[in-house]
Image (cartoon, rainbow, N blue to C red):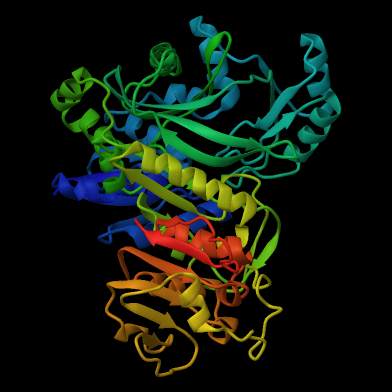
Length: 559
């Protein structure tokens, strides 16, 4: 069985391993020796996602020694699974005469200053910039060009790490100093820094695949990013463009020209573009599959293809590539990745995000911590410091977009329902419960038919079924009314366990039936009344307007 070498099978590039098996070949994972803490963590996480365990080998001390080692595998192809694998994969493929991109173009493929210079040389729009070694050189560049604002970033990087959006020259000077003192994503010292003209406009991704210099678009996406007080960008969400809009055609044509200017012959280009009044302009290209560790099945649901498989088409099946290039751009479904933005440094005691996200209709996968508490989270400053990701997809686009906005609202106003510090309900203890008159709750809500009362302790009440958290499984659903009257039972529960108990209890009501949460119960829920309403909303109950004389009950009807 012929070998295909995957250099750095991390992020979305981990899909190469199974794709190669599917094609009847043997994958061999080659780890480059340059390793940052972020890359080491990514390797560990991605290898856990693999369905099978491929052979994993390490780069030798020099390119030449690595080449001799790889010759022994007689590879059919060599591909880059991530940005950190691009230089080595390009060198090896070119040296062995395999399909790939010329080694002479490597600077244009990986360095932000060189790729912009390549665009200028090709006569297409580029961003004016200069690489500098000191704040003084940066200020000189800005003054020469009349720039009052600028962008400062490493020459190589990923995930907006080390990116600064500077509103004045003082911030430019400070940002250059900061970047020079840090290492980039790949663990390399920043000996020079890129200072660029600042472009303002919406930011897009255009992913393309290339076969012998012929390019086709595989996916188009739009970023939602938020500028931080520190002068950077953090990722809020990323959505696919399901239907092209006016102006997108020009952007895609520009992306093809960028691929030509950079010298791309084979494989994927993940390009990031900004559009202003002058049209599209390249922010940067990354000559590998799109990131965010997206599962192949998720990408297939959204686009009808996934990029690692499309890369193999470029090199193994040119005829299929040409047929796919002739097809219209038609993503199958709306897809969104929501990045959880942590608002401050915090020690998290629980991850209720899981209980919420898995009950949304559009959730495909949750990539976030689910245990290991207490865990320290840093304030989100870039992609690496986000609190997790939720992969969303649905046949109905409106479902995805409405649930995205719901999560964004939770993030802004109810963050303890996502990552909980353990403080939101700590002032309640057992024995603090207010007396509850269940008959009065039923009277004021006109309860009739089959009624379930969920409370702390067992009790025989004629005409209704009573359950406790321990006996909830005795209820078999289809009740006309469910009264959630837990009190002391909630005091020692983590946020996620409280949510699960509440959701499981709500699920006992039949379609068209009502769930009632009295004030004596919702005082034990984070955010009180609004928290109870949110839990009903998450389970897609129709929140009812309060009744006159309703005493503050929260009521929802199962839609």
